[in-house]
Image 1 (spheres, rainbow, N blue to C red):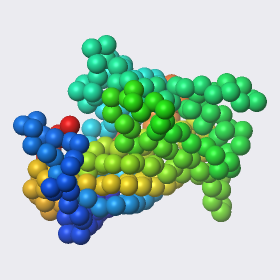
Image 2 (cartoon, helix red, strand yellow; image 1 turned 180 degrees about the vertical axis):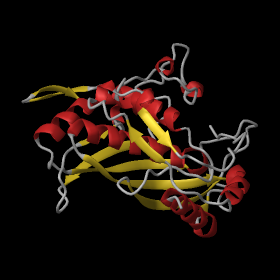
Image 3 (tube, helix red, strand yellow; image 1 turned 90 degrees about the horizontal axis):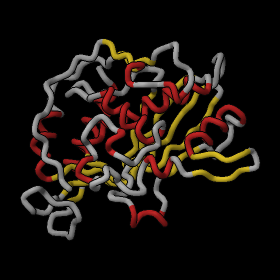
Image 4 (cartoon, rainbow, N blue to C red; image 1 turned 45 degrees about the horizontal axis):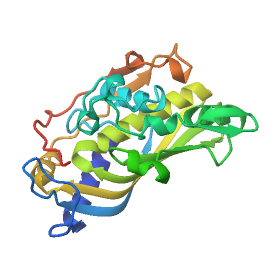
Length: 282
C-alpha cells in the first residue's frame, strides 16, 4: 500500500488523539460565515518520503498532480507572484486587482544577489551550486524574508527547501535529497499537495543536476486540522489504501527550465472518491 497513505493516516490520528486545541483562543483565520476557525494541532511533525521507493501520492483521495506541479513551476521556474501566470485558481482570494499576491513566493525566488561567480537569483544559485559544489551544505531557497512580510498578501507556509547530496555506496550517480520546512499547514487541504509538488520539484532538480532523487524530509511546525474538517478527516483515514502510482518525468527533458506539466507521466493512479466542498478558512 502507499507509504504516503500510511504516514498521512498516522499523522492525522496523532493530531486527533493527542493534539492540542486553539478553541477559545484569538485566531487569525475565520470561516466564510465569520466564525473563528479553530484547530486541533500537533507541533513539529516530521515525515520522510523516499522517492527511490515510490512517489508519495495519497490514494485515499486523488491529488491533482499536474496542478501541483504547475504551482511549483509558477514559484521556482516562472518565479511569478501573479495569479495570471498560474493555471489554477488557488491563489485568487489573495490577489489584488492586478493579479499580484505581493512580494511573496515567486517574487522572493527571483531576487538576485551578487556573488564572486556572478549574479544569481535563488533558483539559479541552487542549480549552479549543484553543478559546481554539489556537496556544499549551503544549497537552499528561502522565501521568508522579514523585511518584505508587510508587503506579502499571505506569509509563505512552505518557505524553505534545503538540498543535500549524498554518494550512496555502489551508486553510479549521487543522490539528491531535500528538507522542506513549513511553518503551518492545513492538513486536509494542503498536506499531500505540498508533499507531491516538492517531490516533483526534487525530481526536476535532480534530473537537471544528473542525480537520483532521494529523500524528501517534510518538517511541519504547526500541523493542524480545522474544526470543520474533523469529520471529513475521520472518514478519509478509514478508507481503503491502494498501491502508490508510478510517477516519472519525460526522459528527454534534462534542463529544469524546459519542464512543463506535459512532462509529468502518471501511471496506475487509483484512488478513493474525491472529497467535495471542503470549506477553506481565510
